[in-house]
Image 1 (spheres, rainbow, N blue to C red):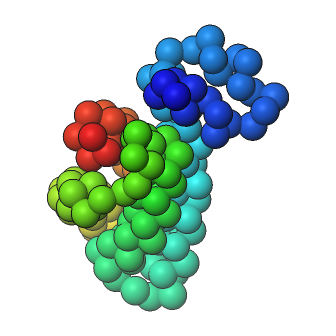
Image 2 (cartoon, rainbow, N blue to C red):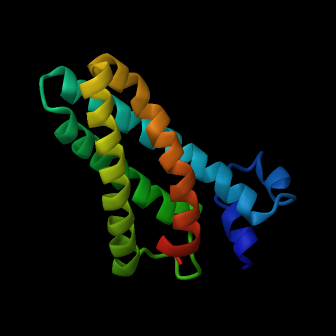
Length: 148
């Protein structure tokens, strides 16, 4: 089974004829965006909820990113970037953890700065923008390093 067929066979039946005409990287982008959307909702909701309940912005952000990351690591490893052996390995988790730590440091620093200078409500609004920018970098890192 080719890698392209492996990816398209996981899609809903009605989408498969269209997906077979697309390059594999396009399908990966679409799946990554879908998984990322789910991650963003979980991450943002967790961040807003925790910070609203009085947990500091840096701690709320780390917990929120961790919650979204666990969902994203598993879904992207099982759906978006599935390899021939169809299993996630420790090396994938280690690479993911290294990238996640760097991205979380960037995200947390930006949100702490936004909260300090612009206020908590503005930080809530900026959070999705920061995460979307990091998602673009994350796709490239995931495709070419984490899941390979």
